[in-house]
Amino acid sequence: MRRRSGWTARERQVADVTHHEAELGDVRIHYVTAGSGPPLVLLHGWPQTWYTWRYVIDDLAGQYFVIAPDLRGLGDSSRPVSGYDKRTVADDVWRVVSRDLELRSFYLVGHDWGGPVAYALAVAHPDAVTRLAILDVTIPGDGTTNFSQSGKRWHHGFHATRDLPEALTAGREDVYLEWFFRNFGATPTAVSPDDVAEYLRTYRMPGALRAGFEYYRALERDSLDNRKSPKLQMPVLALGGACSWGRGLEVVESLRRVARDVRGGVVEGAGHWIPEEQPEQLVKAFKAFFRESQREQLVKTGRVSC
Image 1 (spheres, rainbow, N blue to C red):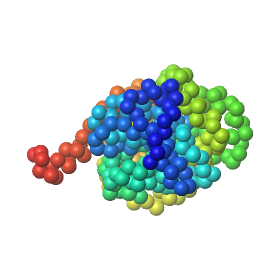
Image 2: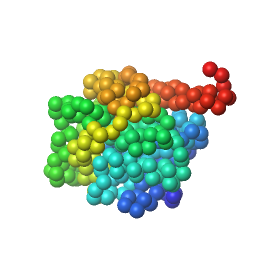
Image 3: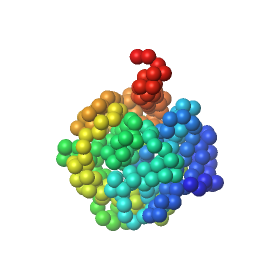
Image 4: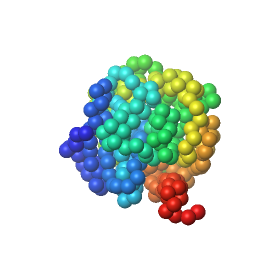
């Protein structure tokens, strides 16, 4: 584990966050940690980085040891040519958590592509993932065949096309990525221009857009992998933005196809960018969900009565 000393101006606004780098051989993973207590791993999606969790980290660090990595190819992690199927990305996270940090169990949260990564990690290591939360994404291969909602998620097919999106967006990352932030939130200003600039800092780096598009190009592989997976046994919290696709309800519906114990619903006043649009609602939901597990442990050890 190696600490990174350089912070951007935007990153400095997140209180008490420490930067680290894990050299895993085939990839270098940048991640941040904060707080103390039961471990809680937060996985971001596209076109974002660990920074999407900044408000959530500030509130959760008082009760949890928070770990937020930049996924393979994104943020300040390295950008291998291959390995963007979600099982491989999940293994990156597992190696950071189990080897670098030597954690045996943890709570796990995934938003957007971080959701399928979190699901793959929970399937691979069910004894380590105590509880799982998935935000505003469905699971590829969940028993349905239309992950992209009959083309409503138009960018899925575009991003999956080999070479074309790189050619059309190179040098115009601001125009392209800002469109998503303006149109996928509950309001066009759900993510501020200053915060978009922090995301653009990394997505303008060589290979960053290609790496992001590779997440979409691995979708067929992900679907095949997940169809073979057993149903998850740990409790799952599934939340969608009330102003997002399917009014957020499709998240719960998808997770109920792949897990036995699912609860959740919608986050009011949020579109797709839930951690930034409604962090207080999200933190409240997380604390209530994870507190159930902590109470269960106390009951098992006889430290509290039922």
